[in-house]
Length: 179
Image (cartoon, rainbow, N blue to C red):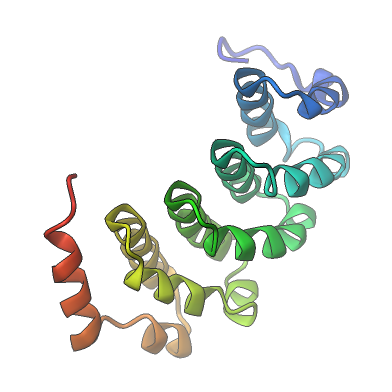
């Protein structure tokens, strides 16, 4: 795959490897799915149950990996199943999962802006601006900036506008940022 060989014929076999508990293997399987899901969208739908299950995993790295991968797979059939796990990850107890989910909102907006607006993800993203973790806040700002660069919706623009109180919160969070 990394040397330019087409390994899309292995798609069904790779999907069978998704159930592994080995984190490194799971990362490789998810990377494969990101690269080849577009070529076999009907087969890629078989991966949805594992993604949803992994979004509930006790390990925050697996939860974040699952939501990140689902957001990177640009197949509309999978996008419809992303909403519930993404909503849950945006409210996750672990900041790494929340910051990953914030970026995923921007990716989902790029795929289906109307779905993001109708599902209330812009409001959830705006709520992350008040998060206690500065990395979550930074990723929320980056996601909002990316969405504002591409959106034509006046409702989205007004909802995500940085007004005085939001700017004050961001400046306060800036003192706590390490990067």
